[in-house]
Length: 105
Picture (cartoon, rainbow, N blue to C red):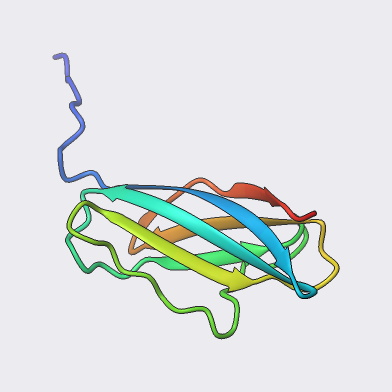
């Protein structure tokens, strides 16, 4: 027999883009994200690392974003001083975004 696999509408996804700004010697990375298939108010965890050798961590003091009625969320954190780039991804349950690279000038 032939099986046709159709993706279900309940398949959730998360995407995000991030930018870095330096002010007064501190680097703030701000991310704008969107999701599909997640309920309004769903918590989304941000994860950061500065090189492929680092472990993914959630920065101290960073608030956990929640999705709005259109699935959007925003998140920011203070980057570790002296880093040239950061990698960021978001997850909620078993759903995760692709990691994005953020250049820090």
